[in-house]
Length: 513
Image (cartoon, rainbow, N blue to C red; front, side):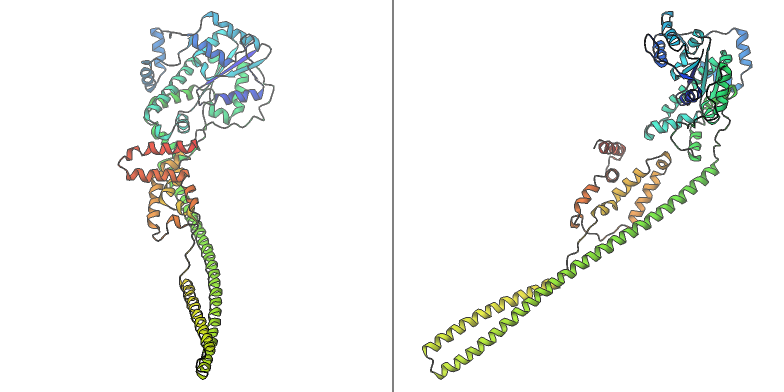
């Protein structure tokens, strides 16, 4: 019965190495029988109660022999880190705790090949090696560049300080130093491999494990699964160049990696080439040209859309004006007809009055004729009053016809999105998806501000005059507008140093909603 313990730093892909062996036939470790504890749980428990094992002091001859095999840089490396105690010293529990390990072995006794992966087992390697002579160890390491790539994924860029980087690189150094110490003492039952290289050449890894365990895997390695590195940031010359500059002063880190490469059974042989400054410049210029082209196309599309909206609005206003003119024309025509009818009535009454007057004169103003004459005069006065009323109404309608129709505005939300706060906020949101975009964010904000100043309209109506003014309030609740408004107000304020905090509050408040 063979057992495999896979140990590696947090970012070394050690868990994927376990998946490869599981695919090829290595059984997963079953929980212990008596306590139902997984191997990882047992390591945590034993590690919490175990005591550190003091390092063995080498004799003078052994010290000289070891020193003679180290280069000058490696000697400096050993002296520098020998002054501080490592966080990963080997631990050994009391004999009473061996029952946990024994219970785990018995639970998996019927499996010919089984194992597990555990990054926390680094301090118990010598314990497991002494406890079970049949156990073999796969020790996995990674490139120091991976530390920064994962930090960029896990930590906000504003919170990434040199102290955080130093802490992570120190942990990486001490962990891999512990791997080397154990590997040099137990080479006959250990494999030291680079996790990234194993993902590229899994067959060699499987063959090496089969050789050291002296067991042929039941499943062939011809159809191994394709596994990818855990780092989610896309590789680029820019990112590699910046990481190289950040770690340039960490000589001990580079020396440790070179030492791992020299000792490894499967070292990293396909390292990605880090581009020179010229390559970086070419890549940056190419990306900038693409961005400028995309901006130009988007601007053309935006202008075309705005023109179409303006044309639609003008056509709609034209139809409304035409309908109002037709309404005024019909009302005016009706008033003119009524006026003409009343004028004809007046003429008829005047003619009747003239006839009556002549008749009155002829009959010497008889009382009956006089009464009829008074009635005609009264009717004439009423008709004149109605005529004046129709005349005034006709003049009012004509004046309303001459007044231009008040335009109807739409697109309040687009008006807000074209304003400076929303455009700046949208630029911040679109440049927050990767470190590359964050690096050019100040330039993008400056460009957006220049474009706004260059094309800023001066004769726009107030938001309240838009028919869909309520849409503007919805647009102001967008994260882009809130971030841009905070930025504009913060720049104008005397407390500009509080701007990052205010913007952080806006993001948190928006997320809570």
